Length: 469
Ligand SMILES: Cc1cc2nc3c(=O)[nH]c(=O)nc-3n(C[C@H](O)[C@H](O)[C@H](O)COP(=O)(O)OP(=O)(O)OC[C@H]3O[C@@H](n4cnc5c(N)ncnc54)[C@H](O)[C@@H]3O)c2cc1C
Image 1 (spheres, rainbow, N blue to C red):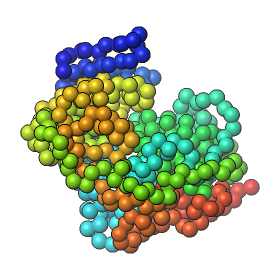
Image 2: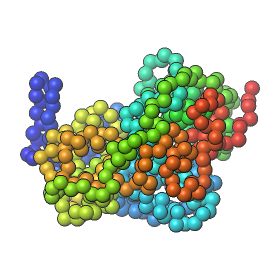
Image 3: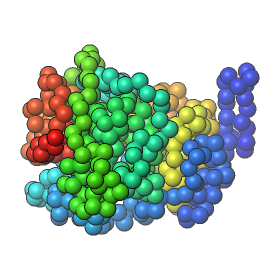
Image 4: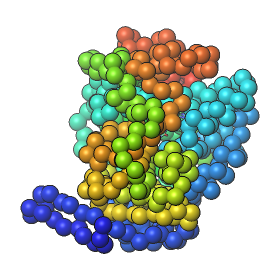
C-alpha cells in the first residue's frame, strides 16, 4: 500500500482513500500532536486536542489499573459521586471497552475472590456489561430505536451539547460535565443524572442525548451507552429515571450546600410523568434461532495463512487472541475515515487510542492507515479477533479475513431472551447464583412506566424518595 493515495472518484460520490500514517511516538505530547496533525478532520474540532487528565491509553496503564482494583468496599461506594474519596467504582471501563483488560479475566478474578457482598455486587456489574454486549450483538442497529416503550418528547430544536440544557450554577450537573470534559469518564450514577435530566426533565429524545454522551466518553460503546439511555429514559425499562435533588443528596453529600441554586433548586421536585407510547417490541429481544450469527466462531477459523494481525478498537490489548496467536506478525490498524468523520468523537478518545497504538508499536511492527478499512484490508491476509458489533460483521464480510479468532465472551450467547437483565441471567448464566442482584419483577415489560427512580443498568432500586410538594 503506497503513501497518500487518497483519491476522490465520481465527483466525490465514491471515495477510495488509503493513507499510510507514520508511527506515533510514545507519550502524551506525541499522541496529542499526532491527533492534531495526522487525524485532523476526524474529530470534533470544537474541543481541544488534549488527553484525559485521569486516563492514559495503553497496556501499561491498563495493567496498573487492574493491579489496583479493590473489591472491598465496592458495594458501599460504587454509586457515590462526591466527595471523590467516597467513590469505589473501579474506573476500569475505558480499558474494558478497548480490550486492554478482558471482561472475562476480571470476571474470573472477581469470582475467585469468594462470595462477599462486594464481590457479588461487582460481579453483577460485570454481568451488566456482558448483557449489554449480548443485547447489542444480537439486536445491532435496532437498538437505535426504543425497544420496550416509545418516547414522545416535546418538539424542540436540537441541542448542541449536554451542557446547553442545564441551568448555569447547578453544582451537581456542572461538576459532572466538568469531569466529563477533563477525564472523558464519569461514574454510573452521574450518567444516570445526565440521562434522567435530558430525557425526563428536559423532555428530549434519548437518542440525541445518547449520541452526545457517546462522543465524549473514553469508554463510549453503543452497547452499554444505548442500554443505559434506554433504561434512564424508561424506553428499555418501565421506570424512567426521575432525576431529583434527592439523589444528589444521597450520592453527593454536601454538594448542594455549595450550589448557587441551593435555594432555587431546578430539580427540587419530582418531574412529571413522561409521555410514553406502546411500541411493538423487536422479536429478536425474545430469542434467536441462530446465536452463532452474532456470537462469532467458537474456535479459530482459518482459510489461509495470515501475514498481519488486524486490530479493531474493540480489542487493542496484549491478550487479543489474534495477536497472541501470531507473536511474530505485524499489526495493522485503520482509522476509519468515513466513520470517524460522521461520529465526530472528542479528540480525547483519539488521543487515548493513539497512546494504545504507540505503546504497541514498541514491541511489534505496526502499520497505521487512515481511510476505508475494507479497501485497505481486502488485499491483505489478516488474522483478526471477532468483534461482537454490527460494524465489524459488515466489514469483515467484505474483507474476508484469512483467520478469525473467537471473541472472549464471559458466557457465549445461546439465543435466550435479552428482554431484561434478569431474564437474560436466567437464560444465560449457568449457575444463577453467580448473579446476586436481579431486576425486581416489577420492571417487566407488561407494566406501565412509573416516575420512580429506575432500577436501571447497574442501579439498585432505591427506596422511594420523600415526595416534595
Ligand atoms: C446513561 C448511561 C450511559 C452509559 N454508557 C456507557 C458506555 O458508553 N460504556 C460503558 O462501558 N458503560 C456505560 N454505562 C454503564 C456504566 O455507567 C459504566 O460502565 C461504568 O460507570 C464504568 O465505570 P466503572 O468502570 O468504574 O464501573 P464499575 O462500577 O467499577 O463496574 C465495573 C465494570 O462493570 C461494567 N458495568 C458497570 N455498570 C454497568 C452498567 N450499568 N452497564 C454496563 N456495564 C456496566 C463496566 O464494564 C465497568 O467497567 C452507561 C450507563 C448509563 C446509565
